[in-house]
Image (cartoon, rainbow, N blue to C red; front, side, top):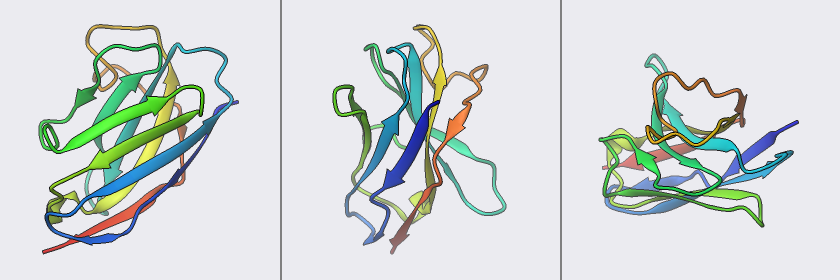
Length: 128
């Protein structure tokens, strides 16, 4: 059974950086998508970045391209989200998520992909 736990959320000034971590366990193999999502109360959850554990290029939401970087270390069972040039609109609860999936060129933020396992979330607050 896959389990996920996020950490690293904090309050930061606009223009600053944060790195979120997601400790993962329970993977049978590398045929998984992992992603970072965020949600603001009253708004729909947004996919921020996704990556396939077996390799390949990550996927990003347009709103974070060039500012956020998703990476993983399979040996350490850890997923990261490096967030630079933070803006007030990046404030949200950030969730790590995973789902078993074969590799697909359309990436791990594709609309038909339903993530099954979620962490508890970590709060990111960016003040201007």
